[in-house]
Image (cartoon, rainbow, N blue to C red; front, top):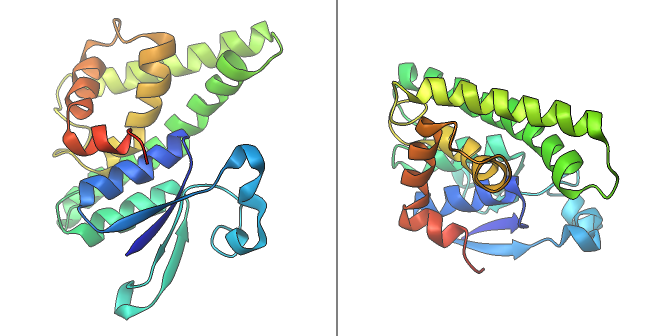
Length: 205
């Protein structure tokens, strides 16, 4: 049974969404970051950078117990382990998935989180910061929209690459920016939102 250390953040939902899509048995272990539980000594042994999500798999490669943090690494590991095509076995397809998985994890989410910080959550009004990160998020949604004009999903079939970008699109694209100007992103988002595993992942835990 895989242990998923989770909280209700964009990266947390990525990992939970991937677990639900994988079909692998898992249990949610909440880590309340509002209460600083991510700094508990036992949790730091699992996630040295005191971030969520993280997983513990008692049956990792070679039957070894493994711990893993960083959402992109978790998506790739669970996607490959599931054998359901979330991370493809074909090396050529892996290249495509890796490109968008890394963009989703390192660029899209990182900058969308700054949008969330300065525009949505921060209690100080920082007009220049709000203007900058709103423009950055709109630019990234435009990049994604142009790509999805010719692709049903970002890297061929539905994969961990899509999962890496869905939560921030859902949280900030739908709720804060709006997707009317990005019809291809909206079509992609709505198709993913309708998946039973996604609905379960975003539900109670």
